[in-house]
Length: 86
Image (cartoon, rainbow, N blue to C red; front, side, top):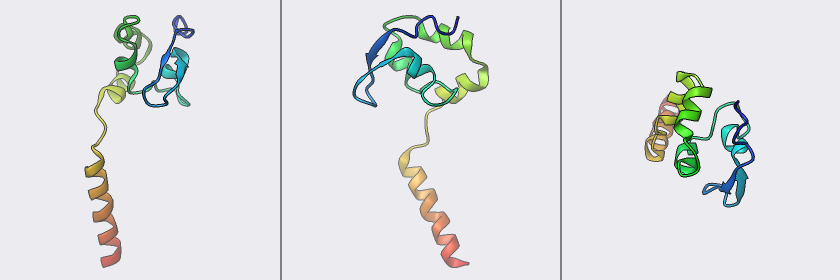
């Protein structure tokens, strides 16, 4: 059952306060938080939980590292230069 760990709580390093596991597995969307493995691995086998409750596309999305902020910033600068040049 997907809600079996929902009542477990811990401090969220991104938000700075205590949250339940239910928030981590659905933080305003159907996709779990990308830090779910880092935060819950000591409490229960979160890797098995995620692999058994989510399809490969979702698992791939949360395990793929985000684009570095410098790359994103450079892309935005390049897009702005192109717009100004037009």
